[in-house]
Amino acid sequence: MKLASYADGSRDGHLVVVSRDLTQAHYATGIATRLQQVLDDWGFLAPQLEDLAVQLNHGKLRHAFAFEPEKCVAPLPRAYGWAVVDVEGSVRREAGQFQGPHQPLRAPAACEPALAVITGDLAAASDAAAALDALRLLTLAVDWRLDGDLIATHCAPLAVTPDELGEAWGGGRLQARLVALHNGAKLDPRDVAAVPGDALARLARLRALRAGQLAGVSLGALELPLAPGDSLRLDLKSADGQHSLFGAIDLDLAPPPALP
Image (cartoon, rainbow, N blue to C red; front, top):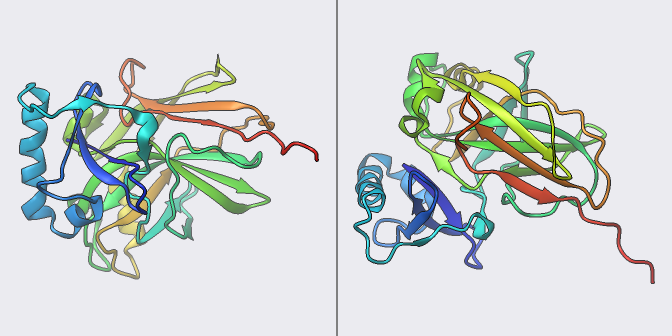
């Protein structure tokens, strides 16, 4: 299933189920209003959301509406934590505050996309197999760093279960293509691979993870000469580049403030 959180004036947004082709959505109000509720009671609530998704995909929901990514906040705006395992295997732990896919970036910064894993409860010292079993949802996240300090993390609009990824997912491994547009010009696509179970197990070596923790597998920094007024669109697609897996992060770099 594909899930998103619509902006509604609250801190967490309102949970919606999104159709497989990303054209339709339906509020999950009768089941849960926030994604964290689902993560806290996954075994009971997730099957109900799956049933709702099946009905949505078959056009059987009277109150479905057109899905608008521009209305999304991050799927889980206030996670219990955010940690990224970089390409060298080291771990960076950060606060779990996430911005939506269209919220402007306030300053030029270094760009590092990551495959983000939303996990259920995971005991300390769990192995990769147990960690993979605790994986609930996947999405795309992008860290922005200025002089090494994290200044913002943006998330794609959709958080999806692994079974929705089709041929992009197999044996606990994601194989995909990162596609970027800078000021409308397409950059060279990057083929990426990530094994999130290994990353989760690394994070859980010394401490337990609770439902609602986000863990990222770095996809490598992007070298981009960003400037105020620029636009950047990042999309993690199937290996053939045809299908968006999580929807795009499509943001503008805020222009400098006007002089008085």
